[in-house]
Image (cartoon, rainbow, N blue to C red; front, side):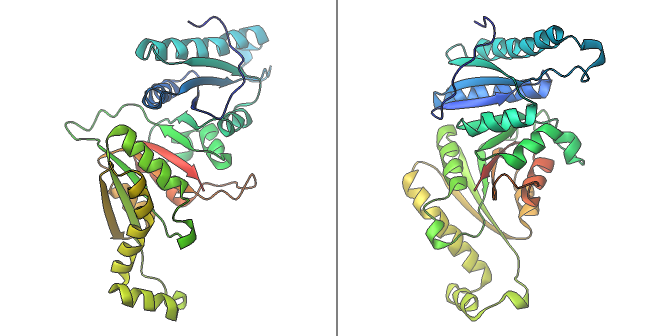
Length: 302
């Protein structure tokens, strides 16, 4: 049981980290992370980033009061996950850092970072939370934004892992962290993988003799998209032969197509181009799925 904060040396192997802040949404993230750790047989690491600032809360300027509250956040989270998963290896850590750099650093030294979300609706910055959004902008390893349990689905089955598959060069087909993550998740859950390729008619100035020849050889623009999707999936089908795959090609913007096909998603997986620490925005597709998809969303830097 929890006997105070355990300061541990984090490892890169079989560890899932979840950020707690005392809210119900972060507890939902802890539940999701505990379920995932149980599936993987991984260690679960609970972290709360706290650095005393006497200007933060006027009624709790005493650093001892703030620290006791910070420790209680971890204690409550650990008690919750141990009650549901007594078999898990669980550690709790108080990070002596501000939340964003603390969570970014914690995510960099773990297999998966899990964060909470306030919900989904019309104002992403408000609903996701500024800390989670800023962490996503800087993350270098996979991040899952977990949701509270869905109560409006009735008998609907949530039995799919949905992944967006964008254009990829032939040399990249065997090294695709987004597809690797999605296939592994579908295999672990016994879920169907719905692989989605959204496409639009290219503008005239983007056409080239080579691209048009490839489209002609495939029988048209849409058949060419189907061919490219099948080629991207082929090595992963071989590696995960037990996973049932639905190949879905649809004309439209990637955000629109992914959101409209998320009705049975237990997990949505999307890639986020990350050129390094200088990145200061989240892409439009990631914004859209975080904004409108009620399932947990995995954002994979690539």
